Image (cartoon, rainbow, N blue to C red; front, side, top):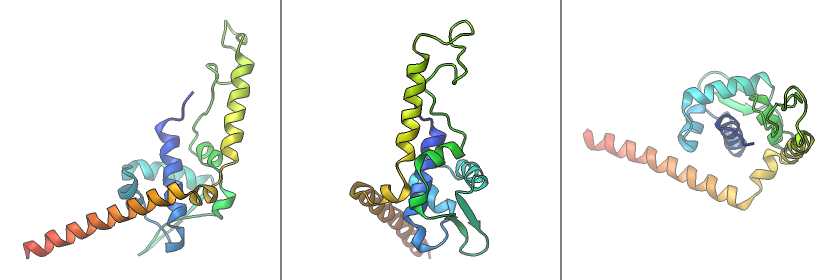
Length: 161
């Protein structure tokens, strides 16, 4: 059992959005640049996140996305569920037909593990992640990197003039 790229990217993008929420709507282009996630992939993920009521879009100049509720009210399981990501440890996807149409010997063990993982992720909110020092440090490094890339682009343009 492992979380696929879809779930990882959705959580990463939502955490980025939560970190930058106080600056107003956040563009997917900004998230893409900081997190190295393709813009088209983010558009697909955010369509699902919007349908699930986790984000709201803001149109117009300076538009982008914002959290639809406080980061303390959005947990990681909500995000993973919104993008239809399975955290299922069973081979049969809970159907109980893993061995010739019947539950296998360890079916209930893997069901319990799946439930434990989901409960664990339900207990982690975006707000609790933002409070972590290592996450703050990484976000600062990413912001500085994005700033440096923008400054490099402008200095190249000035040299051409």
